[in-house]
Length: 331
Image 1 (tube, rainbow, N blue to C red):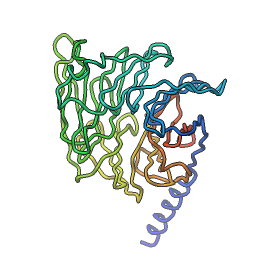
Image 2: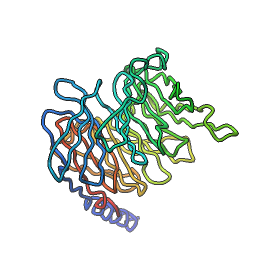
Image 3: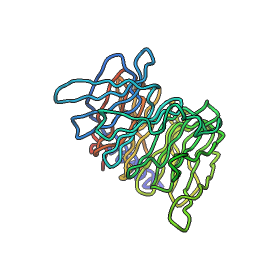
């Protein structure tokens, strides 16, 4: 019995030492004054496309050239919330159904639909403040938007150019989404996580969408991401981390923290970063099972997390784009 006790203690000590070796180097990749950045895209490491608003709540898309250290700001009709890139085409979305596209690396942006007729495309219940978009090929396949805390929508591609998106009212506010492939998406929201899957017709085009709503303890889920090739990980405002296997619909609470979590991002190797209302960043390298706190002075100002070009990236309320070295998390 004593032998087993000491063996267990040794295993715990070794495990703790292995976890404590995790570090997270970070660098300020870009900084701009008096600007709230909601999302950013990194182009060839030297160009940063960022979206958000000024301190006077004026919507803007910015372009920063690290070689010349110059910023260019493009005025938008609304606050920019999300950015996406696919096949060289850039996309931006924002409040009041704003949806823009650029085909010249962000120098010029055009509305996807005529702003004078936007609301003729959508019924009243379909209209939201767009928050996040997912693009594949030369088109946007999924988007999410909020009307208010308890009412959000999931949008998915329609083949008709006259009505670019179908919309599903999810009866909950939406905070984040993670697209597994071009047919499946997980949406984190107020009270549940939604799994939506596109249903294709005999011609291979989307005909409808099947939605499964997972009510999990009344949590306000603020982020959802991958935690490896077969794992989905979500965080909640109460500080809890949940995981599920792609082949199983059961979500399990795997970690609890004292941080009100707002964002999470992971990679195919099981490395993850989560942030919230704290000066600490949570990091994991084992699919979200164990976590370590790393102090970062600007952590509580982070507005988005993303994975681009084998690095983790963060944007902040005070105009900073931060680059994290992912390789340090890997075992």
